[in-house]
Image 1: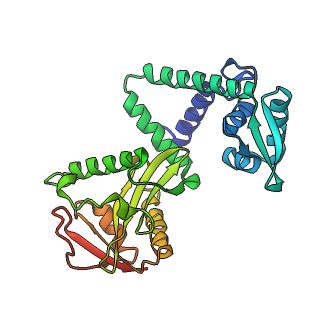
Image 2 (image 1 turned 30 degrees about the horizontal axis):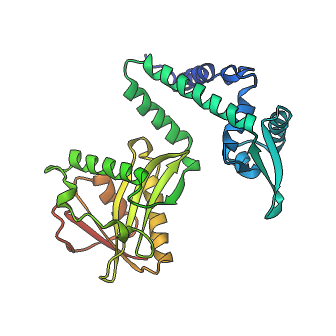
Image 3 (image 1 turned 90 degrees about the vertical axis):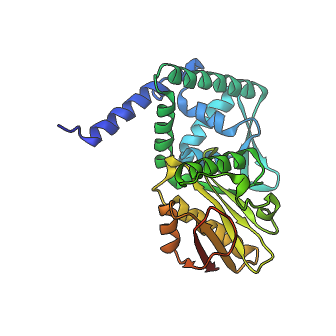
Length: 291
């Protein structure tokens, strides 16, 4: 026998509704439903423009206005016109609102810890959540240029190195590779891009500037939870556009034949195989593309 996948999805949906308190009139015991609580969180301690809040939460203007009115009436939120654009309004938290924001964060953290603590395979549970979050949020992924030495960039790079070590027959030691200098992946020579989903990194890719008449694509990595969603192709399009913006017209890259999905991506997206162009001991496949 097999269980209908629709039945499995609906069971999951009901479990999430129960666990997160979507239908509670006093979400996390703070005296208001989930909707206004989410608006309070989206405004945050630094404040936010209303259209940004509406877009982030996926709310229509009427519902957002109703939630905002309730928060204003409670003394949690102030609404003001943007001093630089009279057509826009800015929401900010009052002192009371900031205290409520802090209280919600503490309760949400405790709820998350409770979920993990009562499951015998917390890592597997988190992996499943990442997979679902990536699938449901794939249309909301954003791309950000960051310093390749930043903590979040280093996290992605370490994940990339660990995967190479697992998949390449001889393993991988970044100290033996042609590891690019960070400044070569920063403007004006290059860039380092992250794919972000609601604050979590799902992938990275670097553009390394050189003085050889071309730039190199480096360190393309996609989190396991986001694979199969076309994100690698989107990241390549983003980094190629960044190259054009920097006046770079020729790109090269290398990879290892054990990374079959990467080789296939390059073969099917306009990259031309070329002879080896570096002394890095790990790659055995080389490509070039004019942009």
